[in-house]
Structure formats: structure tokens, C-alpha cells
Length: 584
Image (cartoon, rainbow, N blue to C red):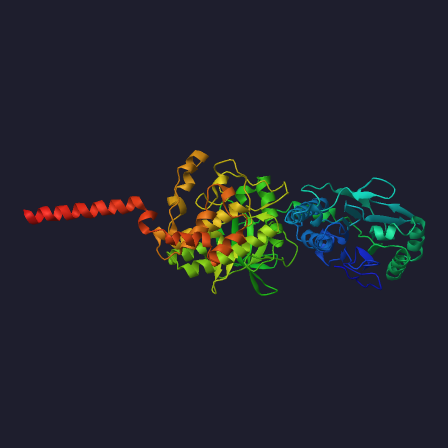
């Protein structure tokens, strides 16, 4: 993201919005460049519905991971913004992405013992969509607009001045769990020229000089960037970064009309074999529920099989369900992992509400478990390791799945695991995903859900997804659910206190003690007693934990004294009866 994008002539796009851009970044007098820059001008429908982006970030030098934070901010925002649903406004898309991005960086920073070692960066984003400029701003990078020969500052520095010599950054991405984001909308005119730059530029080049440089160099943005870098480099001891965006031509009509059409897209009808929708030919129905329908379709141009998911007509008047459905494709598009189902691009603008995923020819884990009751330990761990990697990928994006169950796990012919269904996912910090925590079908079934969803006063978290994974592994190894299947009936802490964990090896003697030890810890009804991370659980499954192996020294009689004496008494009674029978 730090390299400049060479442009020697205006970019001609879809015959409407036309831009010319240039950007530069350099370490300057420093040994490390903690600035990050990025420009993306998409083609086709994305330019119409999402616009073009210029993003600039300055990693906080006091933070050890400032460079990584700035690069994550720029690359993460651009990638995630273009993955948001077409029906979302620019403001909603930008705010959602920034909220999730801030939460993720803040979470990563908490892994360091000292706050100064965190992932902290400024971030300023300019989006040109249709005839409007949208500015998202946190920190002390700046956005200027040159119009009619006059330079206007479009952003405010989030800096608190202590003295003439000392100041500190009051706002930044990753600095706190919640971040206040400056947002601004401005109508744009043809010939408007925008400058985005870090403090290494504007602190060392007077505003009047910037204005003159931009006015004289508006026809050659590459050379103008070089001039600004040279002017600042003569006296700056900081990193140097600048971006220029010139509006050459605006669309004839505002893209808001198209956006309204996308927002008001109708529900698709019940599709039948042979029907064609937006270039997608329906081959057969795969699944139907009161919330959604799944179809196997073929992209006729690419000759590729895909799965189409549509909302059910039963939720047509349920605004919350429609919003949750639209969120699914965005959540899935943010995850890039071979064990998580991939969201596919539509071949053309949609005429109704749906989204597409890759097609996996195989069976669900539920079906596999029915065919393989009491799977071997090696088979079970092979599949669970893949599932843990899938869930770990979601957790790294600050996302909880919340519906991990065998029916939401696919296996292909080679045993590759794919986690599916993002309906119940929750992205930290995004208020719009208000998934109910009641057992109404919105979350995992009661058999696989962590008890905090139904009883107790603990909040859900990564430990909740962990519990579901452990439940599946327990069932694969024993053919039974943990706690004799009684967990689903618990509705209070008192109910939970009456449960008793039955070790795996009592139900399946082939299960190693260390595997059962890991399961017992992952299946604690108190989430504070579970593993803190799914990767820790995986480690103990693969590498025998000495604490669990110590149980092997305990004599069998002591492991289950009650059952031992019950069996002993039963044998004595049988012997007595046999003796009496012989005497008679």
C-alpha cells in the first residue's frame, strides 16, 4: 500500500465519473516509513454504487506496531468497503467498516502489556461517489480542496496542544474501544482538486505555497506530488505522504437513483428448475426454511456452479430480518480462509435480493456423523482442527459465528471442512447486528449452544463458539452430547450447577485422557474456566497436556469408586445365589 500508483493521463472509466490521481510516500529522514497510502478506482458497477477511494494513514510513532496499524487501516478499509452490500449508503458502509476496523486494532493492541506497543494509527479517507465527496477522518492527516484558485481545509486535526513544543494525538484508530469519527459530505464540481497529506507535508510547507503549487501543477499531478515531497523533504524530519485526486468529469445523473432502486429491490419469487435470474440458471432447490431458500445455480457466462441464497417471503415485512440477510454477504466477504465458505460475485446488477456463494459438492457434518457413529479419534481431530481454523479466521476479524453446529459444516469429497451460514454472526462494535440471544432459532440449536446464551449472567464471546466446537467433538467421539444431553434444558445457574460432566473415556475407552481433559476444560459451564482462545484448545488436543496425563496414575478404582463397589456387590450377590442353588 506504500507504493505510488503511476498515472500520466486522466483515467477514463464508464463514460461518467472521470478522475486523475497521483500519490507519493517516503520515509524521509526516518529509517522506517510508518505512513500508508492507497487509491482504488473500480470499474463498472462498483464505481457507480461505491465510488473511488483515496486513503491515507500515519502510524503513531509511539506505538511499536504503528507501521502495521497504518497499513491495516488503509488496506482493510479499502477491501472491506467494497465488500459492503450495494444497498448501503456510502456513510453507512464507511462507518460500519471503520467501527469494525477500530475494534480489531484495539483488540490486537491489548495483547501488548504496555499501551504504547499497541496498533494505533490515524486514518483519513476521501470517497468520490457520483457528484459527492465523502470524508471520514480520525487523527491529524489533512484533506484540502482547491476550487477556483482557493485552498480550503476540509478536516480538523484531532490534536491536543500542551505547549508550543508539545502536543498529543487525541483521537486515532485502535487507541480506544470506541472511536469518534468525523464525517463530512460535500458536493463536488468538475476541476475540483483534493489533496490528502500527512503532517510531514503540511507542517513543513506553508499553506500559501501548497495553494500555489497545486494551482500551477493541476495538469500534471505526478509532477505536483514530486514537488510537494521535495518542498517538505528539505526541512521535515518525519515521513512524507501525499495524494492528489482531480475531478475531470461528473456523472450526468446522480447515482442516488440507482441506490434507491437497489435498496427497494423486491424479494425473488420461488424459483423453479430451468428459470434464469440475472444470468443465473436454476438447476435445483437445495434447502428451504421460513427464513431463507438455497438454490444450486449455474453462471451461464462463466459456466460455474454457485449457490444462491434468497430471503423467504415469510420475512418480507420484517425489516430486521432483511437487514440481517443483507449483512450476511458482507460478513462472509470479509473472511478469507479455505475453511470458510466464500462469497461469490454476481455476474450482473441484481434485480432482486439475493447473494451467491461457492458450491461445495459433499455432505454436512451431521450426515457424516450419522454414517460414522463414534468416529475414530484421528478422524474426529482431523475434522475438528479444520473447523477450529475456520472459527479462528472469524475471531481474527472480531466476528463470532454463534451458530456452530454439524448442519452448518460441509465436507467435500476430500474431507475439506467448510463453515457456512453467517446469519447469526456478530461483529464486535457494530450495533446493527442485534442478534437475539433467545433460543428462537436465530442462534445455534440448544444442543450445541453455550449455556450463557440461555442461562447465567455471562456475556457471549469467543469462549461461546469454543463450547460449540467442543460439543461437536464430544458427540463425534462418543455418539452422545455432553452432560447426557441435559444442557439444553437448563435455564438458570441453579440448573447448571446440577449437571455432572461424564468423561469421554467412560463412553468410549479409545479416547485418550488428554483429549478428554481438553474437552472437559472447553465444556465448562462457566465460560471463565474455559480456554481463552480456540487455538489453545487445538494445541491441547494435538499435544498432550501433562496436567491431563497425570490422571493416568490414578487407579481405576479411585476414578469411579461408586461404580466399583456397585459391581463388586452385584458379583457377591450372584455368587451367593449360585451357592444357595447348588445347596438346594
